[in-house]
Image (tube, rainbow, N blue to C red; front, side, top):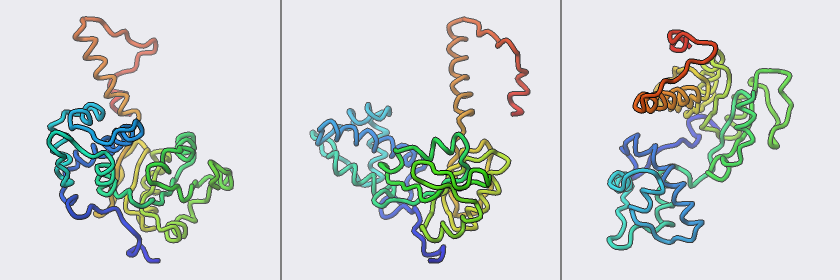
Length: 243
């Protein structure tokens, strides 16, 4: 099957033109709705769902309106119906085949994460350039050599790739994924990837997120009038920024 015939993630119908900020919140709503369904709730008010999702109710109602879902006055939203609407908007009515490249410590953990399957994703293959890792088995998957990428992407109809390599290898891996026909990339490497138009990249930078939390902790300390002690081995702030 040619790359042009492979399924791709596209918004359809009313989901066209949905703001990126709304798209980012839809999985949060879906997770909250699944929890409500598991607890036996058939309906939920916008206020209850907003609390469960950690947003304000006005923002939630506006987000859901992009999907054509407005709820019923005095009743709220049907949980099962809203789960179906959001799942369709996110393309989760089918299972997406995913390849993971880079099976170091982080890649190993991602490969064994059971939550992918329950959320509509199937790890189709694991890849690494290290010949010593090739042939190892993780969570029932045998690690393949990166040179097999093109063939597997075509055979498994893969549209999504996950990169968990060191930063200096990530761009080359991204290029190979794109050449193979992958059109969406989740990047865990601490670098910015350059990709052509039509390829979507989401970046997960754990160190960056910790630095943001550090900022908020410093603000709390400043507001409380406390002094945050320097670590025993003081690091120049310029060195931190440079990293």
